[in-house]
Amino acid sequence: MKKLKHKKINIALLFGGRSAEHEVSLISATSIYKNLDKKKFEIISIYINKKGDWKIVESPLLAASTLSKGDFFSFLPWSKNVSPLTLDADIYFPVLHGPYGEDGTIQGLFEMADVPFVGASVMDS
Image 1 (cartoon, helix red, strand yellow):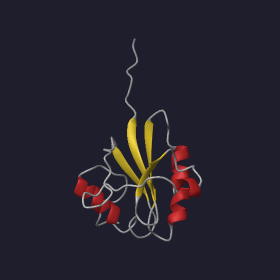
Image 2 (cartoon, rainbow, N blue to C red; image 1 turned 180 degrees about the vertical axis):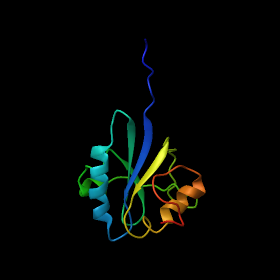
Image 3 (spheres, rainbow, N blue to C red; image 1 turned 180 degrees about the horizontal axis):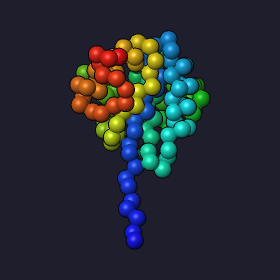
Image 4 (cartoon, rainbow, N blue to C red; image 1 turned 45 degrees about the vertical axis):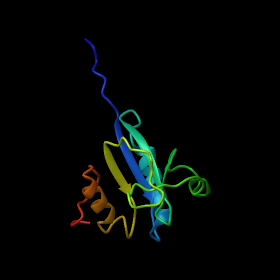
């Protein structure tokens, strides 16, 4: 009997962020990244710097100095540096601590974009 091959779930792991808990987010994201089953999940690592700019990186395991180098972009249409990329994420996993991460802000962005995400709703955050 033939085994069915299941497609990996594309998960966008967002970490870093604008809050004072930026470094804590890096530690949390590293732990989550290490523990996600790579046989089941294709991980898209998205680093957000302290200014709020986004960048796709290889993984949260990179040194902080490496994360901050290179081109950053925005997914927001009114931004000057809008990304030409479209993410093929099945679900978004925010690992952002403090303001913009635990206050409903990022959840509101996901709800406005009508994309699935891990965590509480805007009102519950």
